[in-house]
Length: 265
Length: 287
Image (cartoon, rainbow over all chains, first blue to last red; front, side, top):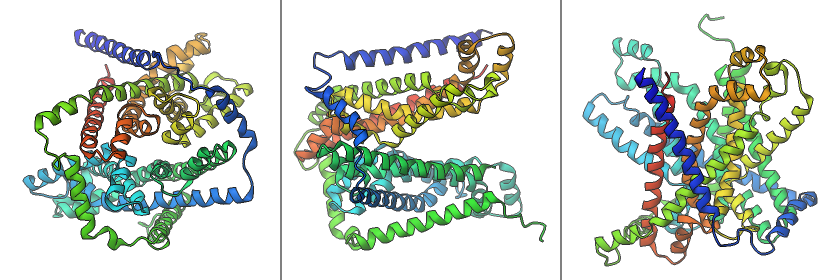
């Protein structure tokens, strides 16, 4: 009984700490002498919101937006496909189920997990900025910058899925004389495949959003168009771009939910 | 028909067609990048790239300048207020997003306006449902960076812009996750309270929230991990926290400072990840 009450107490303390951290952050951030809203900011805000009724739907601009959307989708797919190709072997090796020798296996697992965590923890735009200073501004930068963090994310998920398959089929394969690699290829991968495909389709939406923000380093796409229109202060065009972006994300989202539902039922 | 061969269901057709489309799009995209954009793979795998990478890493580690380790450490420690600002920004934004999502998510769940939860349909709430859901979709679709660029028109540059941009985006994400939670929840406890004569507010407080709070908190922590990664990117445009210094040192080619900032950034991300996994373990304890 005492342990249960201890848990309840610790949860209450935890809640208090979380709420206190939030209140502290709000008080520190918004309690400044500086004016929060810039000079003339409020009228600009109204102007911006009002211009949703003045959407730029001339065929020229819609065609530009359509082209930009296609470009963004292509960048996302290039980055994600490369990430999947790299993440499959990395995920298998870092799941610790492929190599029989304990020492070699443990070294692989520790090193690869560290690398995956490192690539995952840095945002794709930061990678892009670093890559620009290495290979210069080219479409390859956007693709590689998308690929590097997604290898980290997908590799970890692949490893987890391969580890968490039901044990009985694997044991049946092993007792019948299959070695570890064969157990992975004929047992673990087919069992984990639906979950892996589901996760890849879930990541697709995030990948497309990430591709859209590659505009910041000057890569073509819908984000670039929105940025350009915003710099021109053409708010109608900005709204058109935002709506195109939203439709693109919603369509991809619908597609991925359909596939994931089909996989689970 | 062979006994082992499973019939081709509609679900399988959907999956195969989707995989085919995805493969086709991937191949098309590589074709576009390699041929359309005048980029050669030989540029990537050349000696020049290797030299540039080596130079960048040397500069990031500060090895090209003649600096002692203690001075590097002290200049790294001097940047701590930026890391603190960034951490505050992430906590504030995720808190704001959580509060807004929590207060609006029930109106955005389908079983709140049809008859599964309350026994009668409420057409007025259906309009609110569509409104809130479309707002969620809109804010979810727009990346934080673009939101921050737009918000910079109205606000003076500072942490608040980044916090609000992150909060707006995450409200959409969390709201959708939360309302899906409510749609999938067990409704037996709701029914039993309802037969005892509880009203809508009481149902929410005593049946829905106690059941779903662990799930809500888990999603909140998951989003916090994402937010702390994004803070630096949003800071790039709204001149806040680590992002501001990041951009400045990048523009001045102060790569040694950039390395120190990256170290803080990675440290923040790792510590938040560890905190989240600890909190998640605390949440999942059942008794």
